[in-house]
Amino acid sequence: MRWVHRFRVTRKIFNPSNPVFIDALGPIENGSHRLLFVIDRGVSDAWPDLTNDIRRYETSSDDRMMLAGEPLIIPGGEHCKNNTESLDAIVQGINERRICRQSFVVAIGGGAVLDVAGFAAATVHRGVRLIRIPTTTLAQADSGVGVKNGINALGKKNLLGTFSPPWAVINDEHFLETLTDRDWRSGFCECVKVALVKDAAFLDRIEANIPLLNQRNLEAASSIIRRSAELHLEHIVSGGDPFELTAARPLDFGHWAAHKLEQMTNFRLTHGEAVAIGMAIDITYSMQTGLLPETIGERILNILEKLGFQLHDEALRATDHLFEGLEEFREHLGGRLTIPMIRDIGEQIDIHEIDFTALKQAISQLVSRQDPALSSRTR
Ligand SMILES: NC(=O)c1ccc[n+]([C@@H]2O[C@H](COP(=O)([O-])OP(=O)(O)OC[C@H]3O[C@@H](n4cnc5c(N)ncnc54)[C@H](O)[C@@H]3O)[C@@H](O)[C@H]2O)c1
Ligand SMILES: [Zn+2]
Image 1 (tube, rainbow, N blue to C red):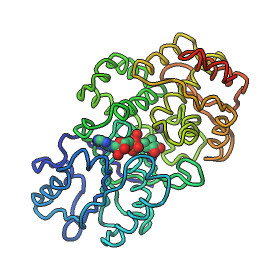
Image 2 (image 1 turned 60 degrees about the vertical axis):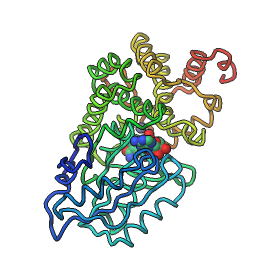
Image 3 (image 1 turned 120 degrees about the horizontal axis):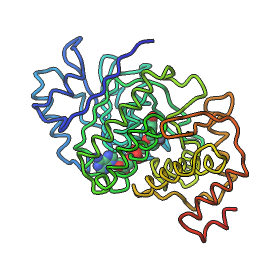
């Protein structure tokens, strides 16, 4: 199967003089392009002129695009994936506004809204075209360029969803200005993750930029986010397994625990925060079992801490519950347990067996690293 994956980076996407969005739609097949915008409420609240800007952009497009009604505003955050309310609203919107397979759903928002809008777009009419405009560091660095979508169901993360490449993905750094500090920080964890599994020089760059990232320097952030998105995209396009038909999932380093921690904390932890803890668990375990040299492991834990991530959470006390995440990770693909680990920076390997005693020890070590009082309770 062949497909085209268009990834663009721009500033002020709906400035009438900016051709990036209209060009991404491609040649017109009949009349003009019909577009249904689906916007994260967090974004529309932070950018109250956005809808007017889109209207102005439409007016200046020489009839190359036409809005199919007012944008749909969807509550942002994980909540929109936890029940079918938002999914139903988007499916209904696509149907009522007669979005066909030649038309587009344009989703603007964080990873959660992009996931639910992507699921709706991939399934109504067996798939309409989707343009993603990610607006968080995490969605711009990782999920935006991905080929997956989904919602949570039956208490499991992303239980329902499809693999479905978007028509185009456009990052606009401008949107990042209005993120909370937590959501600003969250995405850099996925940048560290992709550096750890793919690119040692990129980790050096992230480390050197920590002070600027912590000061919310937009230029430094955009450059780090861009490299992260490119590495994710490169893996999907050239890694040989875009639809994850094998059990190997290198980009899911740290994610077996992360997905479980998100559920266990009822999504009190953001995805990025949970991934930081998940990676810290796997790194500490790897140091403990001799897979990863201590100096390297310590350096990575320090980078995560300097970026502002907590490496423990009280949910880690329920180790048996957490360990269910390993089985859920395996079930997700079937076959043999396959957990991505690293043995050096940029050198990913898969392991198929876990030493649970060492894993428990790793978790208590991690907890005592930041809060010695907690460590005795995790044992
Ligand atoms: N499909 C994939 O391949 C993939 C990959 C990684 C993560 N994800 C998913 O992405 C989700 C996490 O995404 P996220 O970290 O972007 O968080 P999020 O989507 O939960 O958004 C966090 C908050 O930021 C708000 N927001 C978004 N953009 C804003 C802006 N520019 N200004 C102000 N507020 C804004 C949202 O309304 C929300 O309240 C998780 O559900 C995760 O599973 C999917
Ligand atoms: Zn992730």
